[in-house]
Length: 100
Image 1 (cartoon, helix red, strand yellow):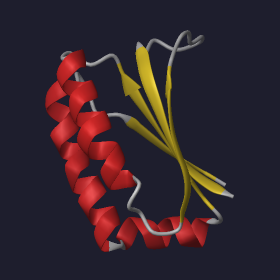
Image 2 (cartoon, one colour; image 1 turned 180 degrees about the vertical axis):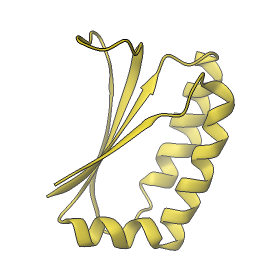
Image 3 (cartoon, rainbow, N blue to C red; image 1 turned 60 degrees about the vertical axis):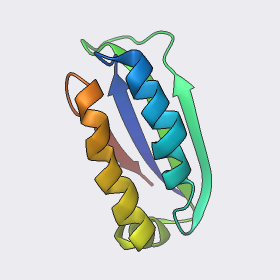
Image 4 (cartoon, rainbow, N blue to C red; image 1 turned 90 degrees about the vertical axis):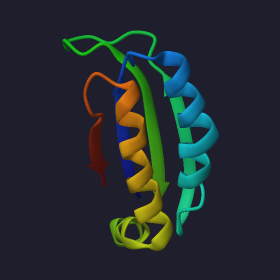
């Protein structure tokens, strides 16, 4: 199992962020090849961090090789390119964590 976790801090424009994230970005992510599951969770509470966490997105793949294939695919390039469109709504870029 391999996962990508994306941690977003509270956006400076929450309405604009959520609109683009749920209407554009997540549908693009769902087109990734080899994707087993996509989930988004709202952060209710966090500890031991200065970050004001807002959302955590999780993309799940069977293994790290399939995850890497997804990232270099046409759909992977498209979703990564669209990620830059989210930056206008954020104070800082999200944290990306790859897990195995």
